[in-house]
Image 1 (cartoon, helix red, strand yellow):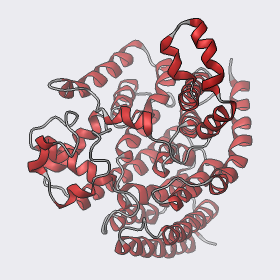
Image 2 (image 1 turned 45 degrees about the horizontal axis):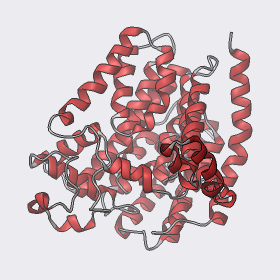
Image 3 (image 1 turned 45 degrees about the vertical axis):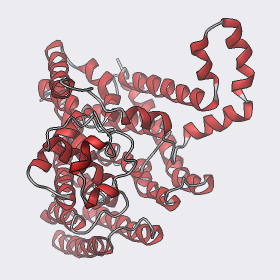
Length: 446
């Protein structure tokens, strides 16, 4: 196939994908029809794979259709209503609250103090009795969009455009690390990225674009450590997932960049420290109560329940006379403590493997941490996806395709049989890939 024919093939594939995204946009809320959503998602994933085969085999340079189509997909996906999530209504509400002069962390949506701000979309906010969970930079985005008069659709379009920014940041990362530029298609045309950004409207792209830029600016001899530090700080203030790369960044940074990191973290928190808390109480409720679609955590919790750890360890705690330890011997708390410890050890171990480059560290640190979480929403895998594309990781990319099986549960969690399909096939590829990659990095250490 000639390069010209390859471009034509990509154009046809892009047209089919755009049509499918339009179908989803016109269908509106698909939470009650998860099989339809998953069928379209599977078709879009197959088209992405076909596009990757065409591009990698026949094109010596990145055709314009790849980037133009990526932008078009995100615009089309934002045209309808939210497909699989109602989180966007919380974003719009947080923006309205701030635009009206209120601190976003002081009152939950159902507080009487905020009653004058309620409109038709207020009833669509999930868990209105719980305060917001979103950190300061997310809140600043919501406030800016609300001040500009943006509604639900405009919020989603803005998030889709930010996700296109992730595509451009990934191109920069590929260029700086000498990786093939065509790998950008593995994110640019990925239906998980399109549907979870502009399609459903999640704030992830704001944090991910900053994180990818941070890694790109820390890579190769053309480092920009100050910019990398500032971008990482901003990403942490979007969602705390980015803190998984903090140890590795600190190892690579000199003191001036560390000061930049600390200064940006403080500067973004300062507007919220005046007149209220720096983080919303909803974040603590979420960490304490939410459990959904996990893998390692529920296995540990169910193992602790079988062992009846609360009853068995009670005499030991009594003999120590330490009442503060008592709550941590019960299955849920014990499992949570275990995954926090495992995540911390995993992140630190990767951070000090000098043979591991920043994109690979990003993929393994974020991916490993997310697999340990009590809750794994499909959009959480977006944090791994740009680095998986950069490394052309079949296992993590496959997980990006299968994680949407979590939507089969609707309002309930999915059972273990579906969860084994969701995680099983990707892990068959991820585990040996991890062994090879980490073994290779060990051989490269001085």
